[in-house]
Length: 351
Ligand code: NAD
Image (cartoon, rainbow, N blue to C red):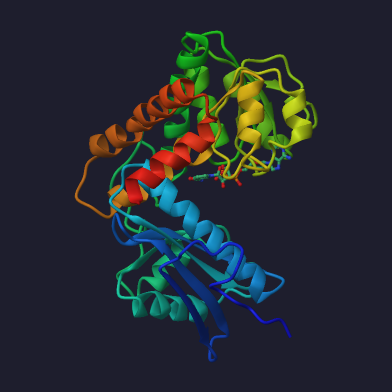
């Protein structure tokens, strides 16, 4: 049997609160971690995943909750960072009873952790949790971005934030507007396809890849995009690479292939290692730190929980541009990679 230490865990970063929960009746096993609440109660998604071990679940919740502290601080939210994980396969092991039990677990923390949706869970699952606790966010969406239906899915806000941030990054790196700029988008899911639409409207030339042909076909027919195979997306002679599929794609091998001037996309944890940020800077590539650029979703969830407006939500998302410019100016003056500067600014804000 593995001995599992929390305080000595390699991902432990002075987390304020780590709670383990088991509900024998429903079979729920879950962990909630609050990393830092200096700026406010901790907001973060609840993920359900078939973790191979408790240790793997602990590692994930420690790492992800820390990431949320940085993301919330950079998004200008009065919230701290937290995360919850449910151990189990969301396709085969999810039951309403487990969701009710998870709601009770969240409620037992009296609001220091506020749950949103993450991989493996839907807005309906959150609604079941919401029968046991008031501390769930994003289930009563009131405000819209670009007149998309407010159904609790934050992807329209995430895509809008990525679009405004990408535009700012192109202006900064290339002194150019988006018209005629060549952008390669990896992944045309909820966020990628909406990003493609924004960019197309501004006259950008799109190159797209996905593993599902129907997503490609939509972008080709509606946004005059050029289809590219998933393997070829890194080799293109284009200006911008927008990763909108999975994390850790910026590894040494792929970075060596890239010919772009800008990397700006929605995917979480794009850098396979933090030090690869410097590798990108050395190649003259301006990297928009992922958690700053893709914060539109968490900004959306936050606004749904306060008294706001469509305009209030939109204005807040557009502030992503100011934050990126602050990062780029500091990175330039200090000769330090943008991902490192983003972390420094976040630490100044929540520390
Ligand atoms: P999604 O699952 O809807 O879309 C991902 C797309 O990538 C799918 O169409 C999938 O087929 C495609 N894909 C998978 N592997 C690929 C490959 N090797 N090459 C090309 N395409 C591939 O997810 P999403 O909601 O659009 O989110 C995209 C990324 O942005 C994820 O990394 C997610 O964590 C991150 N993100 C999303 C949000 C949000 O609001 N949805 C917020 C913050 C961050």
